[in-house]
Length: 317
Image (tube, rainbow, N blue to C red):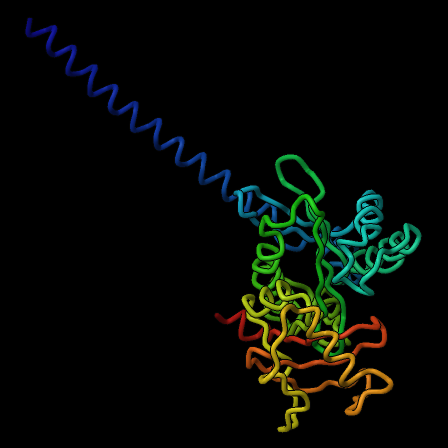
C-alpha cells in the first residue's frame, strides 16, 4: 500500500512539473513568435538600406476595425491597379474626395504608375498605401500622403462601400497619425541612430524638409470627416488676422448642404453682396459657434474647411 501511494505521489509531482514545463514552452513560443512579428513587420524597410542611394522603400502598418477584423496597409503596387480604377470610378465614394467626382480608369492608372509608385521606388515615404483585410486579403481602400509645402504633408483616404460604417477611417487615422507619422518624423529629423544619412535625406521629401505637420481639408457638408479630424487631434488651420470674416452663429440650418449653399450664395457667387476671393483663407464662426478656416478652392471647384495636425507634439505624447 505504501509503495502504491508513493508511486501515485511521485507520478502527480512528475505530472505537475511536466505541466509547468509545457506552460513555459508555450509562453516562450508565444514570445518568440510575437518578437518575430515585430521584427518581421517594421513600418519601413528598404531593398538596399545602407547604400549611398537606397532603393525601393516598403511600408507596412496594421490596425483593427470595429468588428475586430485586422487590416494592413502597404505601399501601392502595380497589381493594385484594378482596385484603384474601380474605387475611383464610383461617384458615391469620390463625392468627398479630390475633385468630388468619379475618375477615369486611365487617370487612376496614371496616378498609380506615374506618381505614387515612383516615389516609393525612389525611397520617399509619400504616395498611396493600399489597405487589405489581413485574413482574406480583401481590398478595403487606400490612404494617400503627399507633400504640401515645407514640412507639411497632405493626407486623404477612401474606403470601399462594403466597409462603410466599420470604423475604417477612424482606425486608419489612429495608426497613420501615430505609428506611421512617428517613424517618418524621427527618420526625417535624423533621430534614429541606425538609419543612414542617405535615407534621412530621402525622408526630407515634404517640400524639401522633414515631416512636421499634416494638413487636410473637408467640405463643410462632410460633417463626419470634420468630426473625425478633430477627434484625431487636428485643429482648424490658424490664421494671423484677428477679424472674423464670416459669422454664422446667429444662422439656423436644417442640414449641412444648406450651409454650403449659404456660403456660396452670400460670399462666392458672382453677384454676392459680400463677395470674397477664391483660393484665400477666411476665418469663420460656424452655426454651432466653432471657429473654422474656410476657402473656395478653385482646383476642386468646391468649398473646403482647412485643418492642421502638429506631428512634433503628437510624437512626444
